[in-house]
Image (tube, rainbow, N blue to C red; front, side, top):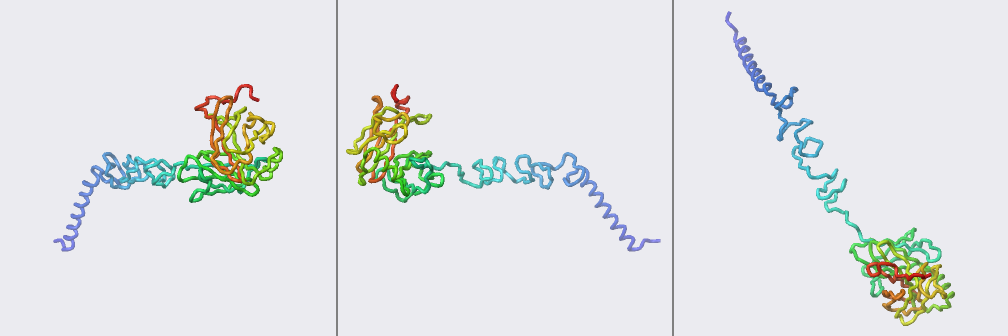
Amino acid sequence: MSKSRFSRHFEFLLGILLVLFTSLLVFGCGDDDDDDSSDDTPPDDDTDDDPDDDTADDDTTDDDTDDDTTDDDTADDDTTDDDTADDDTADDDTADDDTEETYVNFHLFDAETEADVEGVTCTIVDPVSGEPIAPAIVETSDSDGVCAFLLADEPAQISVRFEAGDYVTHYRFYVETNSEVDQFMLSEELRDIIAGDLSVTIDPLDGIVFGVVQWASAGGVEYVGCSDVTHDAGGGELFYTDETGFPSVSQTSTSLAFSAFAVFNVPAGGPYTFEADTDGEMTETSANKVFAEALTFFILSYREELWPDNPTPVGCT
């Protein structure tokens, strides 16, 4: 019986399908070039130009956990960081902010009780005139008595005026930056008590100078005893402090316990030069400016580079 037209067509289609299936066997299975097959035997396609999404990829030159073959983040060790120039972890600054700010922290305390003084107005002043600089830089001491300055222009030194309630206005010139500084505050009441004990009458047109003679070394500072202080202020009454830290009529040179001095009724103006003579070793400095009814504080310093040892003479008591 001859085949029908339908049977001949069916056989023709079956032949085409057989050819296609044979081709798939030859080209799809022979060398396993398809990386998605189950028998992933070498040589596989895990080469540098791997286009597939294998979880264990050939991207051995980058530090990413994913399969990003285009990632070039091999030189950057910053975790979650877009800052390729610095090593700050979790930092998004393209311009690194690790620079130090210039600062001075003043600790202000009561001269009698040593209690912290809160609410002191601290104003940076010109070192020559003693007037506030422009634009004004003003801070206020906190509950710990700390008056903190952060300075953008990075000066080497600053001069500051301190004002508070019932306290004498204080001036301190040429304080080195990046330092922690203790500064006493003398109340008006205590000033009057001390003046009475010394038989001094306060002139409201004059000021007070308070200085400390010290030896400064890399290891810190020390008091310098038995030092005689002179000045060119053209007036004023000078008294040395005794072991209590207050001026005394009986002390004739600086005390080893607290080598300071006070000069009352110094004419407003300046600068004035103060000189210390310690057993023939001389040093001097300036009280830059003296104001009426105010106190100017400064330090007469023997520095280690010129005096390797504290110049206090042997036998000084």
